[in-house]
Image 1: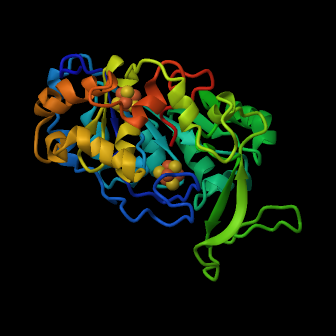
Image 2: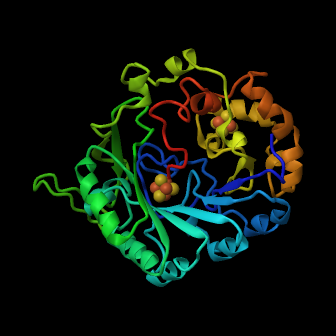
Length: 364
Ligand code: SF4
Ligand code: SF4
């Protein structure tokens, strides 16, 4: 399935810390509180430094994204970046962090590109990227681009920002972004609306304007704020499968599933989680905070997480372990069972990675 020599790319979750509070981010529960079982941690930089990259002759890409945190939160990010001199590094970030000077320096690196997650123009951006500042993000992007940085823009289209698509295209050109990519959230899986709860944020519905008061601490958690709605342009996987609203599309997806084809092992890519455990992809790793049944099923496959933990083994041993050599590949064929996350993403008929309206794997 994998070997050091054929590995083409790493995807790291450098940190599960984050400054932002995006409503659909899996680090939060539906009320916007940090998930109780989230292991809030930075990936130990020594783990990265010990990776035998001199043996990885085909290692071309390093992606810094992650499930539960922002890579810019990592205190030793600069050191990590210098470790991968011969790889193309792609950073995906909310970009509302760090100084203009830091961004300017980053832009001078020819092997680094940055995906800025900007979900709207002005305050519309902050409706999803809660606790970030649109102005700060643009200031940072400007500093990065002006010093020669290769910037890309990811825009998640919702109902509240879909009228800004053309304006965003123009702004991205004017500012010098190399690309703007419009995507949809794959998390409207049972409903077209997502209730947003939280504190420290205010919306002025009366004036028709959206305003924020990030300093107001009177508002408490679990306070209903507003609905996030899917874009009117979006056809969700649930709709494509004709699964009824209010019901998870899982049953339909499972009934119509095809053979599992593991996109990450085909592309020879590996995901390293912020706690040091190794998986083929971020989707399977996200099960750590998933529903009980998904967690239990992964535990039945992996049995002992120490076996895939870089605190206890080197990468070679992990790739040679039963988990990577036998258990996971066998599970794709149903022995002893297919993991629901693998069915959901990588079955060739209805999996999100293959379906017509396929979701983006590296959504942050
Ligand atoms: S989606 Fe990304 S930026 Fe938003 S809260 Fe989650 S980790 Fe942070
Ligand atoms: S979801 Fe499963 S099958 Fe798909 S890339 Fe991840 S490990 Fe492979």
